[in-house]
Length: 300
Image (cartoon, rainbow, N blue to C red; front, side, top):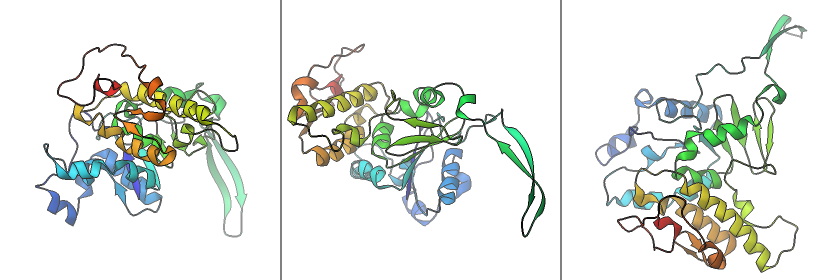
């Protein structure tokens, strides 16, 4: 299966509710879906996968208390981590905008005609050469990721970290991300060794393989990656403020299996003395109603 990572926008997209659950189990008319969902379905079919997981459809949306949401939201980390890939509607602010930009892509493409002769064809073949990396603006991928609407949504952070691979649908082209590189349609390769606009991957929480590290060194790598996560996450928005802890609980569960550490409301026992040194840039108030202990950065 494939997952969709996207921004809902201010207007709630089509959802599954207790009233529509029976109907959803029977069928969903594609014509009734917003453009982002339709594009994701098309891409899923192009990749020869049968199933597409979309949060608003696969989790029952209802006022709290919502047992289905509590149960399924706790599984979201597992869902994204085990998907074949994640489609990220990176440039869309709402579900109606679609995955693919309406802007003219590759405006500097060059048409080329080539005389071709094979066993079953003889004539002229036309090609369109897309621009190389040198013809695109410098740091194009980095700039687009920094501005991407999907990177303002709190839930999307753990989706990005846990995904095995991501298809980023950006305004200028599509980029495919794996555990080593990001590759664009035009052959552009973005290496994680450069300063990355992307959140750290799970492997970045551990020392590089083949290097012996003691406890202090392992804590250094883990704390550095987690501090990056907390800074990125605290800049993002959530529709429901009560989701502040649940929206990274899947990541925390995955990390507990990876490093055998104890997790306390946004902080880790092995690095607790360092992670308690946080401070808020703007908001100095503790949120009400209660959502986390006052010593946690999540409470502010």
